[in-house]
Image 1 (spheres, rainbow, N blue to C red):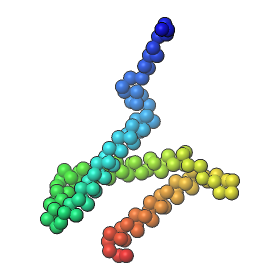
Image 2 (cartoon, rainbow, N blue to C red):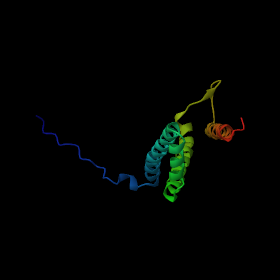
Image 3 (spheres, rainbow, N blue to C red):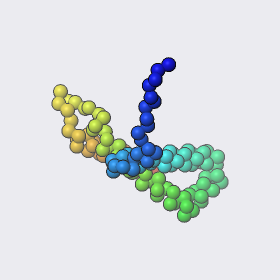
Image 4 (cartoon, helix red, strand yellow):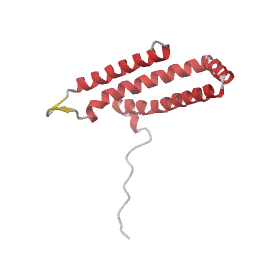
Length: 131
């Protein structure tokens, strides 16, 4: 046996409240739960669609309630926050090079936003029946 003292825990349960950067980090991590809940809602929509017209109609009526509209608005804002913070983080984690030269962080961010816009337009066209 040794006579060493255990390492004292220096962090409190509220360590993340001390600095704005930590609070933003925890907010981003918390949005993951809302993103997950929205994903569960989409899976439930597919399940309702697979079960037939009556199930789908009931699901759509449920989505039209004020609570579900508020929930979907909060989830949309969380997904938007999650997307923006991810795009801001990507240049720090992605080292893209072309002929030995690194891309500027603004180029990587712009590429992500352009890809998001193009994919969104394509999805809207497909769902709208224009393709």
